[in-house]
Length: 340
Ligand code: P6P
Image 1: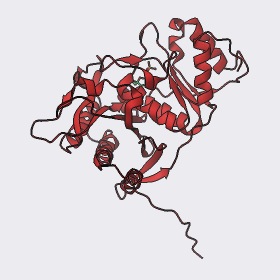
Image 2: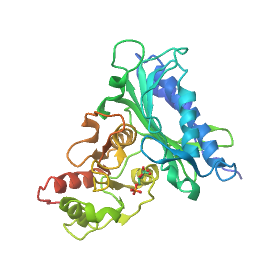
Image 3: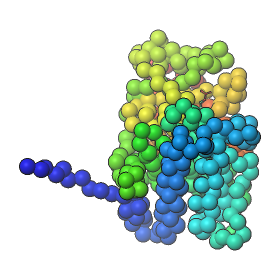
Image 4: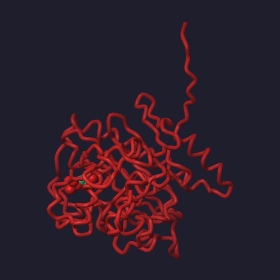
C-alpha cells in the first residue's frame, strides 16, 4: 500500500505573499524586490553549478575595490544582481562589494523606496575547489529626499534593515531571509526551478556546538581575544569545549552555525585592524537573520546592528551566533570577570 506523507508545498512566492498579507499597509514593493532576488539567486545558482564545466573557472586579471583578485563568477554574479534588480522600479540605488561606489538606477528606469546592498558571491576564492559560496543581501528604506538614492540611503545602521537574507550554493541551493517576522529557509528544487519552504521559523540554539575561527592570526590577537578562545576551547571557565568547524566561506560557516548552534568569530587583527568582514553587506544582513533566529551579533563592543556606518566598504570585527556564546564574548572582551 502506498502511504503519502502530507507535505504542504509552499513556494517562496506564496510565502512572500502570505507574509505581505500580515501588513495591510504593504504596497507590495518589498515583495516584488524579494521575488527579483529569488530570481537572481536561481540565475547565479545555475552559473555556480556550471562553473566546473563552462570555462568560467579561475580568476580574471583585475582586482575589485577590496584589492582582491576578482574571480570570473564574482563578476558574473555581480552583473546578474544588478541586471535583475535595476529595472523593477523598487530601488533608489544599490551597493555591491564588487563596485567601489554607489550603483545608481539608470535614468531610463523608475526608482522606488528601497536601497539594496549586497555581496554577490562571498567566499569566491573557494569556487575552484568546490567549497560552498554564497550571496548576501540587505534591504533598507530610502531616507534621502528626491527620487534618486544617495550615499545617505546606503549608510544606515543595521537596525534599520527592513529585510535581509543570503543564498548558500552548497550541496543544495538554499535561500534564507527575514522581513522581521522570523527567519525562514527555502531549498531550490532544480527540477521545477522553485524555492520551496524547507526551514520555517529557524531558531538557533542558545549555546553553540561549533566554533568557527581562523586561529592563524592568534599571534596578533589581543589578550582578551586569546582568553575568549580559551573559554570556547574549554581551557578556562566552565563553558566546555566546542568543536572547531571553519570552512573559510562566511555563508557556509554562518549557515551551519545558524541551524546547529555555534559562533563565528573574526576579531580585528594586525592584518585587518578593523576586522575583515564588511559591515553593510555581510555583518549587518547576517546579524539581522541571526537575531531573528534568537542569536546575537556583536563587534566586541556593541551590537552589530547599532554600529553607525561611515564608509560603504567599512569592515568590522564580528562575533555572531548562539546567544550565550556571543554574550560570553562581550563579557570577556570588555574585561568583565566571566562567571559563565
Ligand atoms: P580568512 C572569504 O574571502 C571571506 O570574505 C569570508 O567568506 C570568510 O569567512 C573569510 O573571508 C575568511 O577569511 O582570513 O580566514 O581566510
